[in-house]
Length: 89
Image 1 (cartoon, helix red, strand yellow):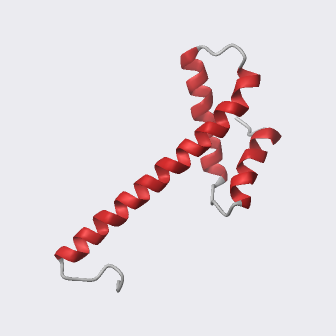
Image 2 (cartoon, one colour):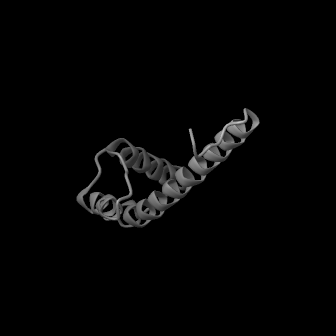
């Protein structure tokens, strides 16, 4: 699966906003979009893919941020239990 120029443009917009997205992540999101369209039996795949891709990139970044925040909160809790300051570590 190759990311088209239009889809690369969507990734470039996020990268221009200093949001890091690796090429592997971009490929995974494309795979996910294609899988989603397969399951839903989407007919106008060519027209729908850019819209779905842009939306799924946003969803992916949101999930990544939520997961990172959760991991930081868990780490902070563990450090507090050990009597250490999360800011100092």
